[in-house]
Image (tube, rainbow, N blue to C red; front, side, top):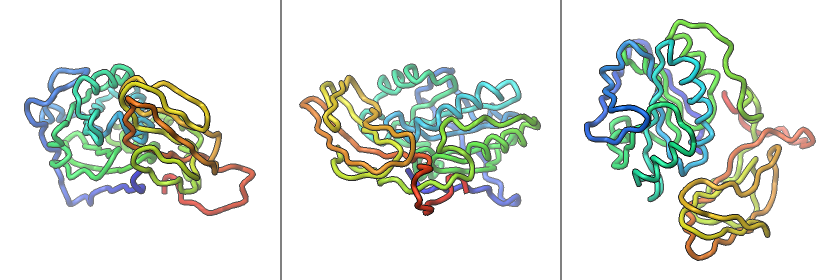
Length: 267
């Protein structure tokens, strides 16, 4: 996961939303034109179904779509892949259906939009006002309440923001740094709230003596803890399974852990 970064451009700087290139595949909607979104508040997020940090933001995007669409919000997911399966249109369409994503998704297999935006990672979130002027950028997980309050401000509505989906999403919480992601299957010590693997193929993976089936591209849970935990991973994949990365996500602090180090989740 990229370090937390958020930018609200100065008022005197007007960055207008770029248009969507013609010919890109769309899901859940017919082709959209950004110019036709004028009058709406538009949230655009770059994501990849093979990256767990992208998946962890989806509940918030889906909820904002449901809560604010009638008030003039348009949510658009730009699927721009990191691993080979992420560039396959049918795999992306299957993931959008499996994940029950309700809002518009455009497939950016050649990373045209990635380059136009100068995007820097997954997930990458951009908020455009009703004049299609950039008002906020955020990379990585977090800043959910801040983003929702900005959406409300731009729409002119006032409501109670969503409750955090996970304990570690609580605003202002001090989170200890998790182990960095690793290419392929990683075996060894780690510290995190959970560990995941980006996998494809057909076969099995054994994690710490437990075996699970792999039946296609996606992010598979390896171990999950109630809070930030130190542990050891022992991973082995059978023939027919391709492992692209082992990923770690944060966990809420363990109340019994006396360590006070960490970095704010949303500050």
